Every structure is written in C-alpha cells, then in structure tokens.
Image 1 (cartoon, rainbow over the protein chains, first blue to last red):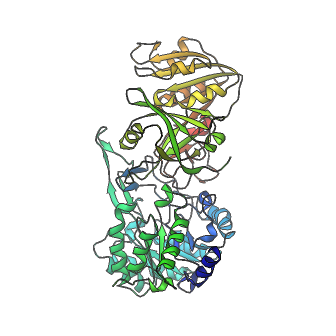
Image 2 (cartoon, rainbow over the protein chains, first blue to last red):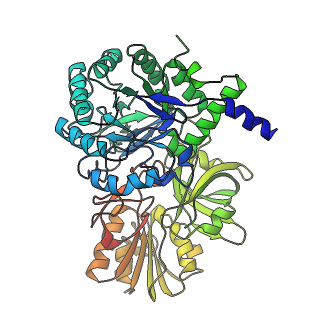
Image 3 (cartoon, chains in turn yellow, cyan):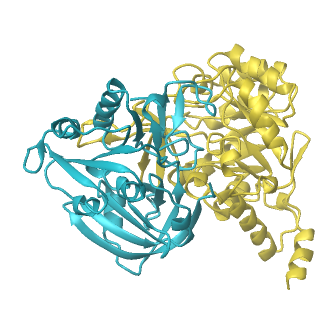
Length: 311
Length: 255
C-alpha cells in the first residue's frame, strides 16, 4: 500500500514556475508570519516548502511600533508590528546562510520609506544568493513608504520600474487590498515590469476596548488577516489574475489545503500561508500534504491543471 | 531546551478559586517533564473563530505524574471558555514556551502581584535557599495558603483588609525584608516599583513580563519589550517576551 502511494506521488507534478524559477510545489509563506524560518525549523522541514518568503528587510534595522501590536478579532487578527527587522546586513550575514542550508527557494520581502530605499535593498539583495524579491508596497502600519506606494496605479507603475532597474533578480510586487480597483493596480505593476504580483496584504481595521475607552492597538489602526478576510482575498486574486499575464501569488486567510486550492483555482500560481503559522506552526507542511492528497483523490496529474480552472 | 509541542491534553480538574480566578490541572505528560518555573503554555479555544492561543503561566509542575497546574483569570471570551472546561475534556495546548526563572542567590525575595502570583508558586517550591514571599492583592487573596508550604508569606492589600495596607513594596519595607535576589511577577506598575527598589538597594532582580502574543514562538514580533542594549536577535532595542523572556533581569529591560 505504502509503495503504491510512492508510485502515485511520483506521477504527480506539483512544480510551478514563476519568471523562469521552478518551485517544487506552490506553497510559500506570507511575509512577516514566518521570520526567516528559524523559529519554524523545529516544526516544519523547510526543505519541503516551495519557497520561504521572509519578513520585510530594510536598509538598516527598524524598531517597529509600540505595543500592544496585535488584537484578536473574530476569525482574524489585527497587527501593527511596524516592520521591525534587523536590517539588510544582519539578514544577509545571518538569516540568508541559514535559509540556504535548506533545499527551498528564497523570496526576500523588500521594504523602504522612500523609493531610493527600496532600490538600495533590492540592489544589495540582488548580489546575494536569493531567488526572488517581493516588493512590499502595501504595509498599512508605517507612516512613510509601504501602502503609500501601493494605492495609486501611477505610483505602483513608477516604483515597480524603478526597483526593477536595480534588481538583477525577478521581482514580485505585493499589492494592497485597500484599493478601489485591484485590476488597475495589478495592470500597473505589470506595466512597470513586475515578474509577478502577490496579494493580498492585510486589510486595514480597528478595535476599541470599551472598558478602557481606548484603542486596542497602540498604533490605533492595524492590518486584518486570518480566515475572516479569505473571501475578499480570493475575489481579488481572481480579478487580478484575469487582468494580467504575469503569475500571481495568492494569500489571505489560508488555514488549510482547501483554502489554498480556492486561490489556485481562482488563478494563483503559488499560494502563501500566513496567519495560520501563528496558530499551527506546522500549517505550511499540512497545506502541501493536503494539496497532494487532493490531487491523488481527484486524479490530477499536474497542479497546472488547477491554476485558474474556475473561470 | 527542548522543542515545545502542540497537542491535545486532558483536563483533570478545573475549579473556581476566587471571583474570576480559576485553578486547572492538566495531564500534560512530557510537557511537564520539560517545564521550568516561569515558563508558560498557550491554550487554544474550542471556538475556531478565536484563533490565537492564550498564553498562561505555569503555576505548578508535577514531573512524576506529568501534570501541570494553571491558575488563570477570566479576562475575555477565550478564558471564559476555559473556565467552562470539565474534567476529562481535551484542550489543545502548545508548550512549554519561553525562558523561565534562573535559580540563584542565597536569600530570595519572591514578589507577586494579582494574577502575576501563580508562576511564583513553582519557583518558591524549587528555590532551595532562604526566602521570603510577598503577595500583593487588591482585596481578596488566593494561593497564599499554597505558598506557606515553601516559606514565610507576607501579604499586602490595597484596602488593608489583610496584611500591610498598600502594595508589595510597602510590605517589603514594613517587614524589613532583605535579599540578594528578587523574583517578581505582576502588573507593570508593580514591576517598575520593584525594578526601582532593586536598583536603589543594589539587589539583583528577575522580572516576569506580560504582553499580547500571537505565535508564542518568537516569529510574529507582537510581544516585544524595550531592552537596555541592542538585542542580539532583533538588532534593535527590542526583546521578544515569548522567546528571550518572559523572565528578564531588571537591568536588561526598560519598563
């Protein structure tokens, strides 16, 4: 029986391709929910993941926002971490060699307060052993940069082409859902030369502590993630995937394989597991196992048969 | 330190200790074997809409039986759900998590305030030195009888109904308590007071901190506190309460 399974699995192709890079399966991590993988390597075999997408990296270390930085909401959570990260030097010298010791692709999330900072990080990381860069123009929790670049199609196209000029690696533009017309934003990223787009980042939200008559988050506003946002995310991935020719990485509330398959069927070439990592540190591997089981059960030989199969 | 595991474990007892304070024993198995005083475990809600596990400090550890005791306050819908758990029911947990107390010194002051008192019980049990225990309450006391097994207990209450009127610092001063190490857990204003007291009296102090957490394993960076020096991991003046803490030396952190 066991031998049979191995035989069957050999016939299944879970490989996907984005910008000439082949990923062993379509599952990665959502930036900011997985660190650089170090905290999860006791729970997950990182070599099983299609890719690890790292927490955002800036030119120098960022301290992030004051606490409380999170608040639970029903079916989700708000966060306003504020992109705390140790900066490019520590990332390159410590985190990158750690990740490289595993057989997985590395997508580095790039952040900045100005276009110049994005370009600087992209240029530095381009000379390192990374596979792809994800340009985060959609973080709602910082005063400058982040989402400010991601809500206007003209600025999206502009920053995409600027970063693209400095990057020797393929770039994915991470889009904000806090926009009126996601298709227009997706097209702008494509026009700017993006090799792919990823979405959705968090939706902005707020919670109030009625006993203390104050905001739950020190930052007042945070980004909503988790299963509560999944239907919005699937809808936006569907709209974006149908608006552009470049590949889409879909995310937003994926808790299990069935959720991941919704995104793939809506048009995502890859999917990212985010908030689920906080609740179940083994979530990424369980999503991979679940997709594989679905393919066996439904006699799907190649994952590509499922990408965008719902029209 | 071994890896924290997530698994379903059986509730052995779950009783109301005081208004809003509950006392739970869990059949934790190897979680208990690995646990140290000052560490915590995170409990998951049965209602899947309440996503995040709730971090609760370990009150007592029975390594032989593999049982763990948690004494917790009901502060919201998640802990309300825990309070309704019956013996025999299974609850998903992950743990033990974090870095606990380091046992040291010859003369210890164990200082707890409110719901910061429970994690000090296992510490008091394991501390093999001369020790005084100071417990601060608003009004109603709990767990103080358990502490009497491990040392002399001094109590402070805000209304003065039991022990010294005032806070734990008032009780320490009123009883002329001396120490070469202070262990403390409680609300931030109390910890600030203890830090000041320890600094001005040149006493080493270990403080257990609390903050809202998501993952509990050091990945999400929700539960940071300010550190005196640039932290090795974060490369900024931030330490993770779930990972480098919850117990810190007073001079490591800014409150």
